[in-house]
Amino acid sequence: MKTKLAKSYVDTFRGLSTEVWWLALMTLINRAGAMVIPFLSLYLTEGLGFTYAQVGWIMSAFGIGSVAGSWLGGKLTDRIGNFKVMVISLVFSGLFFIGLQFFREFEWICVGVFMTMLATDMFRPAMFVAVGLYSKPENKARSISLIRLAINLGFSAGPAIGGWIIANISYNGLFWIDGVTCIIAAVVILLSLSPKRAKVVDELDESKKDLPEHDGLFMWFALAMMLFGFVFMQYFSTVPLYYAEVRGLSDPDIGLLLAFNGLLVFLIEMPLVDWLERKKADRLLLMLFGGLLLVLSYLVLNWFGWMGILVLGMILMSIGEIVAFPFSNTFAMERSKRGKAGAYMAMYSIAFSISHIFAHNAGMQLIDKVGYEMMLYAMAGLGLICCLILFAVKNMKDREDAEVGG
Image 1: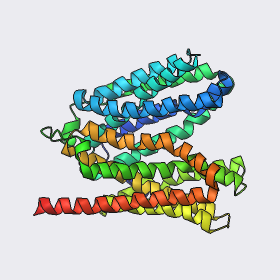
Image 2 (image 1 turned 45 degrees about the vertical axis):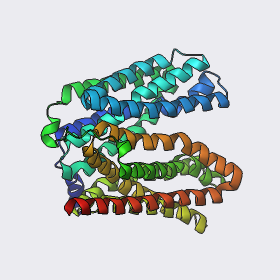
Image 3 (image 1 turned 60 degrees about the vertical axis):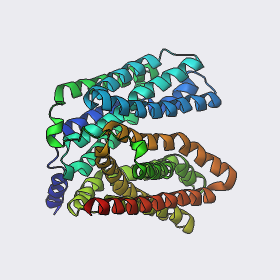
């Protein structure tokens, strides 16, 4: 029985192109190398002695750099191609990570962090376009799931490796290793991927030059994804505080609960996405279902005092994430064929970058002003608005398809 289950799990990875596997490996190297990011606040306060107010401004520069990088990455992808943008992004990310350790003044740290994130997040639109080009249409959601798996594994390994480096070498060692791993990832791309191979798999219509800003349906979709990201990200900032201050969980227990999310994604995402792809389920309905599960994960925390409900809430959120993210990314990829693919994938990335800038601070302000219970209800309310927008987008898409078919 165990052998059969293991074989079934492995089979869900079959059929993906070699290039997608190389992209996943490179993403794993890159994300595992991004060890500076989890320790940035500690480095700025303990290592450089900055105040919390100064760290707040530096983290704002971090978020603005992320948005600017996504936008620039999309523009450059449409001009010079995803292959060149990925290599440029990784090389400059590596150089900026290495250089960041030599800045000591507040203003230069802000500039350095902004430039580092600008270079780093140029990569995302280019990588999404590359995954779309190297994937057969029926494999796109699974290809994205494989990339997400690599990202999750990288983020899991990175902080552990980073903590060891700080303890046994220094913060400076962290910057050096982070920068070198980015450059290694660039070398992996140069050695493993062929720009000429991509269009054999999934041809884009180069005659179409529409921008996402002119695609009303896509802009509503991007707004829904921004709200989804806003609500989802609370699970990694304000919800852990709720676990500690309202439910009385210890730090190790909170860590286990968050690790449970990663375990569920690792075990369930590929088989579930594979099954849904074979069923040819409607992608917008799947996103809507994922959004409703995310909403329910917040409501049950307020409705039930039983401690086990925390596990159920995490399961609901995890399944919502597993269903929504791969298929939203696939929807954006397919929609990008209407115009400039880089600009479309940049807009998709920017939606999450914007939510990243405001989500954590807004959640903290809500806790301070109205308390945890109302914060949870507010997040559920935003999630419902996201679902209503997705429902409207689904109706718009149906009308659009009917007009094309008619």
